[in-house]
Length: 263
Ligand SMILES: NC(=O)c1ccc[n+]([C@@H]2O[C@H](COP(=O)([O-])OP(=O)(O)OC[C@H]3O[C@@H](n4cnc5c(N)ncnc54)[C@H](OP(=O)(O)O)[C@@H]3O)[C@@H](O)[C@H]2O)c1
Image 1 (cartoon, rainbow, N blue to C red):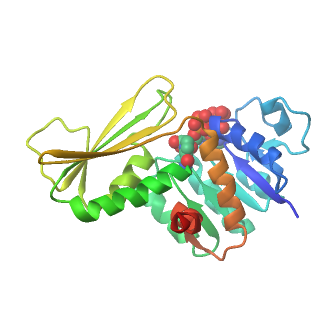
Image 2: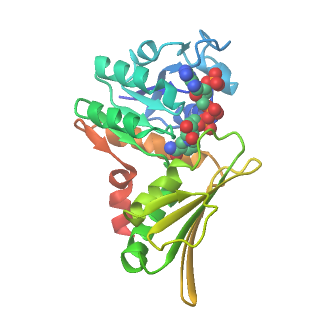
């Protein structure tokens, strides 16, 4: 049986890639999609977004309608849609893959609460490379936190709405309980502070560099996403993983753990 997807943010950069990647994969079919209420795509077949013939699923203005015939919802849209997404998924008892970034602390709490009733996998970055970087920086931090200056430099395209990136915040969290400072203008600084420098430049898809510098030495861990397909493929892997799970809050660590520990 195919897994029927409800794609929230279907008209966006990642949404359209999700659509084309899912159609290439025999494990999936498309049940529906969500677009902005005032979008001219409302009511159209999702195939029209990626110049494909009709695929028999249409774009809805409401999340609940788009998820009605879906087995799972995948969201790459905006934090402003979170309450509607959680309400719909809780009402219909559908699992959710959440990829939107820029959630507040309060919104993250709401996700956690909802995960008591439905399975949710949230990640600000679905690439395998960032999952490996999270493990790597956690290992380095065990040896260096407090003794090295730690900086994270993240660069993204000029259309990105949030800063710093969710991935930079996740990397900082993996390093430890250090105080995070964004784009600092002051000095001197303490080695307990993790400094995040957010750069918005051209059409850069996503680049993260974590720098540990101490004494006469420096280690840099760098990840570059060459294509947004890395995120779409990771999110589809998450959908396959989550469909069999009990309610709970899952992360990419659960998703990639078997692969990570085989390396
Ligand atoms: N987790 C990851 O691996 C990962 C990777 C890349 C990006 N992201 C995050 O995913 C999100 C989307 O990224 P993107 O580059 O695809 O952005 P995008 O191209 O701007 O697409 C956003 C999509 O959400 C829709 N949308 C926004 N607000 C909405 C609302 N209130 N109601 C209904 N639909 C709404 C947009 O509709 P319109 O087209 O009508 O505006 C569009 O379809 C961002 O938060 C981004 O940071 C996550």
